[in-house]
Amino acid sequence: MKTLRTFGYACLILCVPYLAGAEDSVGWAKRTVEDGLVSKLARKSRGFSRERPVPHERRVRLLGSAVSADKAGRGFVGFAVDVRYGPNWHEGDIVGCVYRDSGKIFVKLGDAYHPHSVLLGKDAAPVPGVCEAAPPEVSAKNGSERAKSRS
Amino acid sequence: MVRGFAALPRRLFLVVMLLGAALITASSLSYFDFQQLPPFMIEKLPLRFERLWLFSLRVHVFSALLCFPLCLVLMTRNLQRRPRWHRWLGRVTGFLILLALVPTGMVLALDAKGGALVSAGFMLSGVIVFVAMAHGILAARRRDLVAHRRDLFHVVAQMSVAVTSRALMVGLDTLEWEPEIAYVIALWAPVLFSAAAAEFFARRPARASGWWRGLGRVLRPLEFARVVSRSNP
Image 1 (cartoon, rainbow over the protein chains, first blue to last red):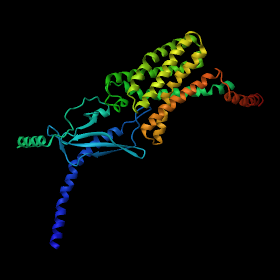
Image 2 (image 1 turned 60 degrees about the horizontal axis):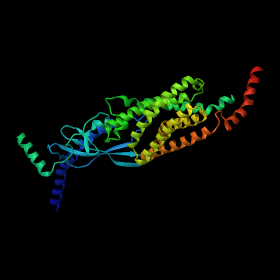
Image 3 (image 1 turned 45 degrees about the vertical axis):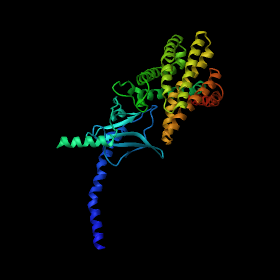
């Protein structure tokens, strides 16, 4: 019995770094969106105009616990920015994805994904194929091709 | 003193509206930075006819920034005593309102945030401005100054919605109202109130009457007493 308990503790201790790593595998995504998008939006003031009022609070929510791969095999994580007006939170005010390697952020407008700079006032055309997870066999194939090319 | 009090509401209205127009101008300068998308447009993306919408927005803002202060200046007694100036500035303003401000406003109203209810509010305001302006010009041409005054009251009242609506939006945001509900209220309440107020003031004679004149009569003895005390120290 004592041996079993010791084994249980050992397993738990061994799992901690793994669990921390899993959390950290998408933690960068939240930080990138907060630094690259949310903080820049927070700096914008409204003025005496008909624009929507500045939200009282914004929060970033990741839409997956793991990195997905698009058709080109690039890893990304989907995110949503929720906004609060008064006591009520409005979910998915901004929806988009952030790429792991490049740190690029894309946001969804209508059916297309645009570079996040469009929300900061820069005119940017939609980018086809981004933020769309490839079917499993395609992503596996791309993954093995990448592994081959690396080796 | 009596005349000063009688003119107080009109002067207060003009000062508040000129201040509002200055604030709107300061906030609207970003619309003419052609390297940037206007923030008001970003929240509406994607738009069906993006170029037409952006062109309409810029023409609408530019003509409104000119027309609103011009309308306020045309309301002043100072300019009304100079018929030649009043006529020419009136022509420029009428031309801009009928051919630029209202048509582009209608294009923008089609994609107004808040849906059909908000679109209807903007369109109603636009129709009032257009009909009153056209009617007011015709009235001036046939020297019917009573009808001209009434029509132009409606034009200025609806243009003042630009200020009162924004002020209401700021107030409701401070009270933490939901932006969607606040936007509808902040549009419809000033549109309807302005139409009613214009009709109310247009029905009164040109010189102030009622309780403002009464207040002047009450204060006249005080003024008299002040003058007497000054002359007999």
